[in-house]
Image (cartoon, rainbow, N blue to C red; front, side, top):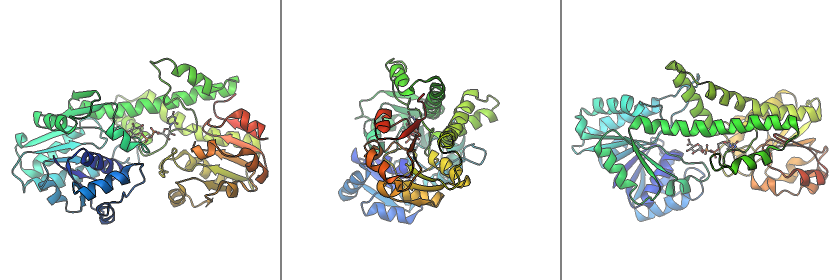
Length: 434
Ligand code: UGA
């Protein structure tokens, strides 16, 4: 099938590359020339395991290409996926400007084409956006009759770090469609995927995405609140989570307590859904609490550090982990940012380490960094683990301790083995550990 993909961010690139792998003809469209040039050289503009390989293959085979000629890309394809960003406004509500601009561009392009064209929204959008924003703009700008447009909503459930795998082997595919044209197109595109497929209307598809992210974020905040109780009552939440997870109705996933959730999706999506519910006068007590717990978790890390070190002014603190989770270079909404800001404000001397995220983190806060662990711990009074990179779980604690000035480790992810840390001579304090 001939498919154009609007937006070459993380969702657009993974969608384009995996659909080309499935044998479709893909053109990825973006206004940023650098990204398109990089793509056409067979390189991925973002760090995502497995993506480079798929892009290289698609470019070499000739069924994947990038273009800045949006109109031509749309006119020469039969289907357009909208994969542009949906950032938050200052009040947390969704900013639909990119969606509106993409819809206008599609509408204008469709004036130069006769055949039926199908538009599938993949961006995460508040319920009713596909039917009440995207479709009216495209209809108006193109001047087309409704029967000449196919319209659908097919949310993505990709996790950074395993997005290619998630796209090639998804748990489920949600086929939101407002007409038979979009239904048939989506059924054809995903015909070789043997996972469960749910057919529904676009607003249901839109909401499935939000409700899924909101549920997972709420599960994390719930785990964090339980973990905070464990800290007081002398219980290890890791064992509690293990016991809870043995119940198949609960599942062990997303019960890892720590400094809270970050990244480009959970914080933005929970805020957007809460704002939409508020503006439609339904409100959400649970989502408000989910966000509140998430904001307070980094403060617990600071509290534990103060409890161990006393006054932070002049203390050297090594931060292990700058990204919002392991296996990514993404630092957006990373909990580390909140912790580092607070430590710097208190007058501590902060030095950061991360296997992939140093460059991006320095664009937000320009702290001292090092990419060798031995360097970063030298003379430190305290280590704070903020991201559970494998490298940190396997570090040689004894030799690190010898290089330090103090002996405190604060585990903001309940990731280290308390016995081993104590054996190495450390004073260990962790979220969720009594
Ligand atoms: C998330 C969802 O998992 C995807 O299904 C969804 O498609 C994506 O958002 C999106 O909307 O695009 P992602 O943000 O890549 O994916 O990362 P996750 O692995 O879900 O982690 C999010 C945050 O939650 C991280 O900061 C992580 O450290 C934290 N987390 C996760 C916990 O604190 N505890 C856990 O048990 C799990």
